[in-house]
Structure formats: C-alpha cells, structure tokens
Length: 413
Picture 1: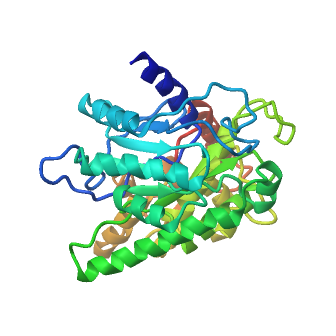
Picture 2: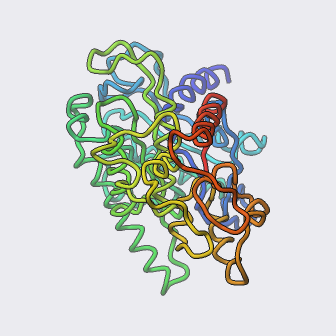
C-alpha cells in the first residue's frame, strides 16, 4: 500500500497542471444497481484555493514521457521522480475512493510512454474495466492522445463521458519553438475525429434509441497562458474558433507555472493568475453574453485590462452606446450592461411585458445596481455619469480592484 501511496503522491501532483477537468454535461444513468451516477449535473465539485477542481480522482497514469516540451514538468529531460500506475491499480483506486465517498469520478491523463497507441490503449482499458467489470456509472474524463488510432479513440468515446485533446500553446509557431516534437495537425486530427464521431452517434440515436452514448459531455482542451508571447486577441480568437468549428464544450486556461531550467521559457516570478482570470471572464462573455472577440479585444486593445473586468472595460470604451433603456433595449444589449447577468436580463425582458421595469425592481431581481446604475435608464434610476474621470466611475474601478485583491478568481455579471 505504501508503494501505491507513493505513486499517488507523485502522479496526483503532476496532474494538477491540467485544469480541463470540469464534469458537467454528461447524462450517463446508473442502471442495474451499479456504482455512481453522472446523470444531469452529475458531479459535486469542490475547489482548492487557486480554483482547481478536486472533486475527481485526478491523476496521471504515468509521468514518464517521450516528449521534451519545455513548458511541461514531466518532459523527459526534467530531473524529477518518475512513477507509473498499472491499469489495475488505477481501477482499484477509483473504486476504493468512490466507495469511501472521496470522489465522484475519474480524471485520467498521462505522459506518453513508448508511443501514442500504447498509452491510449491503457487509458481505454481502465475506463472499460470500470464500466464493464465494476459497473461504474460515475463520471470519467480521459485524455485523447494525439497520434492514437481511430479505433482506440472510438472505444474511448464509448466509455468516457468527456475526452480532451490539449492544444497547450496558442499558435503553431510557439509550439514548434517550445515543443518541436509536436504539431497542430496531430493535435487537430483526434479533435476532428471526436467531433465527427459524436455527431454520427448523435444522429444514430435519433432513430435507434439503443445506440451507445459517445462522449456525452463533449470534448474540451487547454491553453497555457504566459508560456509564449501570444496576446489576448490571439488566445481568444483561437478559443472562439474552437467553440464554433470544433463544438468544444470548454476551453480551459492555465497560467504558466515557471520552470526556470529551460532558456526557451519566459522568466516569470509568479504564474499569471490575474491574466488567466481575465481570459476566463472574456471566455464567459463569448459563450453566454453574445459578445464577439472584437468587442472584448482588438488591434487597438490587444490585451485585457488587468484593473477591471472585460465587461466593464467594454462599457467604458463604448460609452456612446450607453445608457441603455432597459424597457426598450434588445436582450443582447441588456446583457452588455455591467451588473446584469444572463438570468437577470431574461427576467427584465419577461417582466417588461407586463409594465415598465423600475429601478427598485432591479434590486429584487438580484442585479448589482451599484454597477448597473451608470449604464442604464429606467423609472427611478439615479442620474449617474459614465465619464471615466467621474468620481462615481473611479469609485467603481477602485471597488473592482479591491475585489481583485480579495479573490483573483471571481467571475462577474
């Protein structure tokens, strides 16, 4: 048991650098009195202080790797303690941890040892044994290894709830410089295959209800922030393309954790966690608030503002479109008001069918009126200037800075 604990210490620590571990979106039901359930929202999450998900058993199968990517702690040239689980050890850990109520599922990645198929075959065997031998119906997230065969990727998609292929660096130029043994073509090939197979299985289930599920929670990827010189426009343009063309469920962002032993990497004192948070906020605007990348960042403003969140930054840079009359404006425009979230915007549109929405109503809807008051008009609303140099807006920015200091991972409405 001590040997397993030693492996677990090494491989769980190595897995923390992969942040693409959300488990939402799966609808795998528990049948025949098996173990676990990932139906609906599926998994209860808990988070560490830096915001990383720890609700899953999150480990690497091994941190041995044939690649020498400069950004990766597990690269072959790095002098670190190495370890590897067997297939049976991972299966036993998952079942034992689940029965003790420590976890609700498995997030399994791996370094590449020998070759892509050799690694992928072991990942698939773990998921298959959990599903078929132990009747485990909890959440399983597997890494799809670039270069693995189509047959293995298909089998992985039948047993896993989510697959992810990590792009890691936001441009192929940076990938060639920092990880010359990898290329975008090999990364996009499994991503394209998973998208096409998922669509095929989805179409098949429309006519054959007994057709198997295929990655019901979709696929995701990860981009490292700060390991290469790309600006926020490039990062968000890539993310937007992945959402639209690859139908990814999530793009995750990980602030580069400095590894000072490689001259190809930037010399950072600390991980760029604030920049990572701002990019997550911008990503939220793309996915739920109907913003375009150009609305958030552009050639004139290629990077996000660190002092204030992207939604407030947009409002202050586009003062000509404010204030918004919430009793007349389109839903999409109401979404752009700082302090108004998606549910609140929907409530406003619904409520105004029955009469004018007053400022006091907004408070009852949960809108952050201290922010919204500068950007809206409605009966009862105070008269407030949105001039960037006004004392009101300066106070608004200062309060945003205070929240940033208190928690660098706070989202916004």
